Amino acid sequence: MEIPQIDISPLISGYDLILYPGVSEDIHEVIAQIKGACEDISCFYITGHGVDTSLMADVIKCSKEFFNLPMDEKLNINLKKSPAYRGYIQLGSEKTASKIDMKEGIYFGPDSGSHDADTTALEPMMGPNQFPDNKQLPGFATTINDYMDKMSSVGHALMKGLALCLELNDDYFHDKFNPAFPMMALWHYPPVPGDSDSWGVGPHTDYGVLTLLMQDSVGGLQVKTKCGDWIDVPPITGTFVVNIGDVIEAWTRGKFRATVHRVRNSTKNHRISAPFFFQPGLDCIIESLDDVLVSDRCPENPGGTAQTALSLHEPFNFGDYVFNKFQKSYGKEV
Image (cartoon, rainbow, N blue to C red):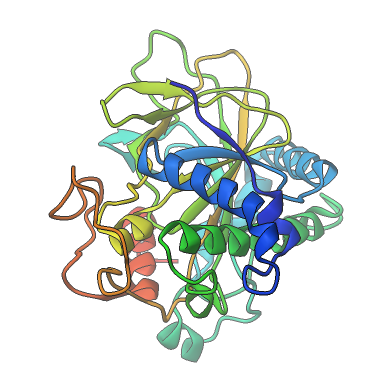
């Protein structure tokens, strides 16, 4: 089985299904491909996304420069200094599937400036990003901010596509992402010996809506098929890997399953990846779309999701949900 590649340029370039129904032929082809991927392997590559390859290369370059810094300099922006969970995470700080993740990283999100007590009480995940000193890594912050802006546009376009996949109006999800709460990480996976039982990150699903992953040239990502087999998702220059998150599985009651994936860098090279997590606003209430979906839920999963721990019976606040996830991963003390 191979991961499908989907050219989403018709979604990116803009369209109007009502005023220009003739142009919808290309859109329908894209929607059919996305729907097929979501119902099958829950993972696909995208091309035609409109993100300049030079910007993508700059992000990888910035990542390598940061992770090559001495540890004491990386710790200047330690995530533990940020009430909003932004900043550097040391190697071995996380566990997945009861094993320590062999990766280090750095988290970014919407930069809301100062983080005072009032903000913390209302929006615990809101606050400023932590960036390395511009004298140390010139242009780092600008590159990351530009990249997040571009990726947000791709995320909005994909949500239109997903709405059409579910036979909803293309703007159905607009209010849930207005504004959105995207986050981004840079991950560095050192080489792991082939005879080691360690993983860069063990089997898991992402807890948001969509993950748009950029990989460098070093492989290691695998996804789990419906049959339980693990298949490689090799890097393809100029593409992003799209993984379905837990929230989409909750929205669709398992019609679109969250992507189970893992990473192991068994090469002799250092692996860099940059996942962009496209997520709804912190005040968004997540509840199943049973009342608006035309199609029946997935027959293999009639009672709900088998992949996630989300409740499909009670609505929940996304901000509370994501904050609890970060608390469990990184603790309450900052």
